[in-house]
Image 1: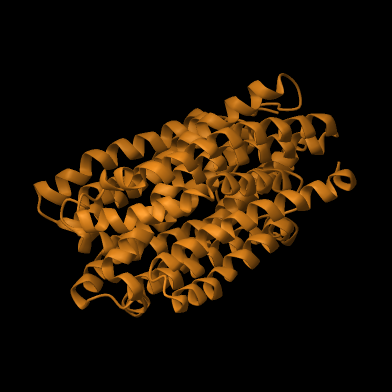
Image 2: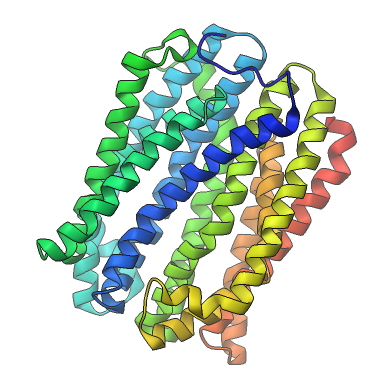
Length: 442
């Protein structure tokens, strides 16, 4: 099929690695947007970081909603390519883009117009809340760029061309890294400068995607960006992407509650530790997400083509690679958590609280990678419900577990233990679920 890569032939290990590395690097780049802001704003002080951290939870929620069309594109377009149905592949691509635009405008409008009441939920000091509101007003208007770029990335990944999103996102990151210090310190705009730098970088990424798809890449033989929505395609996209979006969005709601609890138990330092620590934890998450997305794309094409043995081999290979990396991350967080945290926020009090978060969370990193890897094979098979059930159940268990541990007297560490324990449970349960159902599926 024109502009795509056939994943049903050739070395499985080489194809997986070739797919995974650009996806993983792209995920790191997206994570680096937030870490770059935190690294520079951290030089202003922990209060400024807490303002960005509060908004960061909402941006995480936004990215979770955007997964509906990213995953929807990866699976629907990927399976159409594997089934040699080019017309469906083009239609699914157009539908995912159109749906992403509609969702971004609706959600962005909610965050813009209700910024103050939403951020008041964190119960921060008034001056910190006002900083957060100004930041959210700016970044919420850039959400159409984020949602559409996610859909474009899904289409490229489904086509086996994951390098293109990597280079485009990399360009955006470099721009953000250059603009952050200029706007934050050079112009003296503080957190507002960080928001403007992020907005410009996201707009640039979106613009490059449009240029590449319209003038450079003949992806899927060309397709319209916007189309009149048809029930057949919308239903299929929702069936594939909605469980993943709900899973991650509900996860973000849980994190909003835990962020508020962290602020109650540890003040703004508790919120800083939770939000910044979560960004650092994304090192593990994004690595496994890269392999998981590669596995999902590979499985989607090969499963549709009837290549069951290649699907099994790809799963074994991915599990081996992610297990090794997960173990390394666990050891780094457990033994060097405070040192890693201090790179971004040098305040001693913040390093102590943040170091405790990383140490406790370090015990779960291997299981996190197991969970996300298993999500990849389930998604590629078109079975997005089992990961959603496991993740939603365990994520919501974090709330009662955290509250119970707070009552025991663990303070803000209660939240860290609740997060770590439920992550371990998710990885173990989802792996066992697949093992018990593997023979029926494959």
